[in-house]
Amino acid sequence: MTELLQPGQLLARGVSRHLRGHGFVSIEEFVPARGLRVDVMALGAKGELWIVECKSSRADFQSDAKWEGYLDWCDRYFWAVDTEFPTDLLPDETGLIMADAYDAEIIRMAPESKLAPARRKKLIQKFATDAARRLQRFRDPKLPALPDEV
Image 1 (cartoon, rainbow, N blue to C red):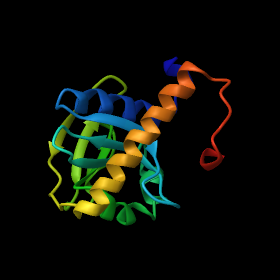
Image 2: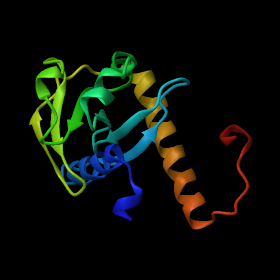
Image 3: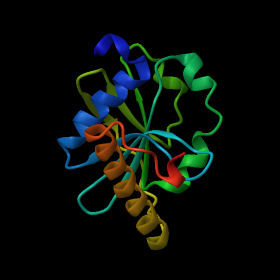
């Protein structure tokens, strides 16, 4: 199965595995709001929400013009890259995770910027709904889509 995944997806898998060890559950390719899609959204036991963007190359990073818009949708924001990535390109005011397909390590903790309670509640509800829909679709792939899933 590894050969079917793109490099960024492999990084996301390693990140999700690592964050699980810190008590977080993760959803890949999560849409916090219309027009935004984050690589990994992680939810901690105390309701904290982290976004991790996985970058597999310099070109992948340089073509990402939307990342600053993600800052309003999380308590902490991280980049996840592999050991070959030129980390000097990444902004110092963001977190850094070194990852591969199997695990990861937090190198630099992202600064905390707490979400407003109403936004947190909305995001946690969307996280739970998306996770439940994905599980149901996994268990019953022929299930018809709901109107808001189309």
